[in-house]
Amino acid sequence: MVKLPYSKEIIRHFKNPKNLGRIKNPDAIGEAGNLVCGDTMRIYLKVKEKNGKRIISDVKGEVFGCVVALANTSLLTTMVKGKRLEDALKIKKEDLIRKLGGRSKIPPIKIHCSILALDALHEAIYNYYKNNKLPIPKSLEKEHERIKASIKIIERRHKEFLELERRL
Amino acid sequence: MKVYMDYAATTPTDPRVLRAMLPYFSKKFGNTMSLHYAGREAKDAVENAREIIANLINSKPNEVIFTSSATEANNFALKGIAFANKQKGKHIIVSSIEHACVLESAKWLKKQGFEVSYLKVDKFGLVDLNELEKMIRKDTILVSVMHANNEIGTIEPIEEIGKICKEKGVLFHTDAAQSFGKIEIDVKRMNVDLLTASSHKIYGPKGVGFIFIREGVEIEALLHGGGHEFGLRSSTLNVPGIVGLGEAARIAKKEMKKEGEKLKRLRERLEKNVLKIENSHLNGHPEKRLPNISNFWFDFIEGEALVMYLDMKGIAASTGSACSSQTLEPSHVLLAIGLKPHEAQGSLRLSIGRFTTKKEVDYVIEVLPEVVEKLRKISPFKGK
Image (tube, rainbow over all chains, first blue to last red; front, side):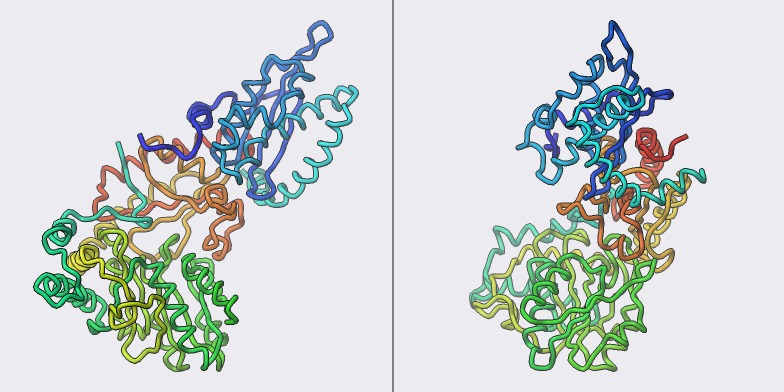
């Protein structure tokens, strides 16, 4: 077999992506995009309350993007399923990169794609807190401002797609 | 099943070409500059190849200079002409959809004090002749427009461009890497002063190309040394490679017409069926196009993922998506014909060739809609 251009972890998730698609009645949705290449993704969350704990009972992701973008969405969803929201928030960029094979296995220009799903997840959790009038951690609030600004630019870039969608 | 649909990237060496080359590795290994029998044997083979190529493009043999690639030939054309003519002027015109080796050479010349203008193209990829006429100035020394585009296959009006350049007294270069051996080339009728091409796009080996330089055209050499190739390109000649290029050109001349018709039939079958996919589009000119290239784009999906899923099904294809490029920029050709970045993102080039079969085309027709559907299902766009 000829060597593939990505790590075996990335290829494994790309070949058999987990939790990709849409949840019909999600409790929250989060969106993020890569300003450079235009990759866009969306995370859907189902959250269950159990003994006062809020647990991610289901999670799905949608991706318009490359191999690495698909792989990290698949990976992240498997990591957070069944986790409490505050624990899901503890996952760091470096954790994702490590699980995708490490920085040495990801081309430098693809690092951004490899952590994009984390942005979308944080947005989804932010929206969940907001929808349910729960206190929002300061760091999450700050991140939300950053991601929101990028999404606006991405939306402008995909304006035609959004219009086409409406017509279909 | 393995289906190679990336002939525009490179082609396999034809077994007949390989057979012609083999004696020139160990048996007839001479240096063309040597006086003895071994050297003469090698020289004869090179001159034979030169004649075949001259014959295919309707030039004189001594107007054909062998190089290591089309990239080298294009660097030579631009830089060599620029430096030989800098007393006359410093203005160069190139089309905006040239191959990177032309664009990058032009960019480098800019750093050396030359001025470069970029000729726009329409939505099919055709250059605007009126714009060209207006663009040519007193100090313009060279116009470079490719014969056929490598991404979308559009064939440029070379004859008309050549006429304009001749009338205005400006040298005209065309990069024929994609068209040479596939469609007719006549340097006299087309009024080109320089033409460049490669061997590996026409079932010859990699590592060899050539440049046609019309007799009397002043050009500065890039490589200085022993004075090979009429003093224009020093380097011991790659004899097996040149023999391969010659044989590939001989076969191309003989089979071009029949092969072109076969490819057109296969391509039509491919395009008709691929375009049945909802929200799919064809790039490039509907008629003025090489017989072997189809460039599509599909809404809502990204090309790198598409190419990799096709690869997993055994299909080799390529994309102009930003995600697959080293710079995260979408294809400059697709942007030049007016595609939006997100549209270029979903582009797919399928290029067929001599060994493509109907069975292979049908396999792609079967697999491609499934893969597009799979990616659309997980795309955040196209929500139901």
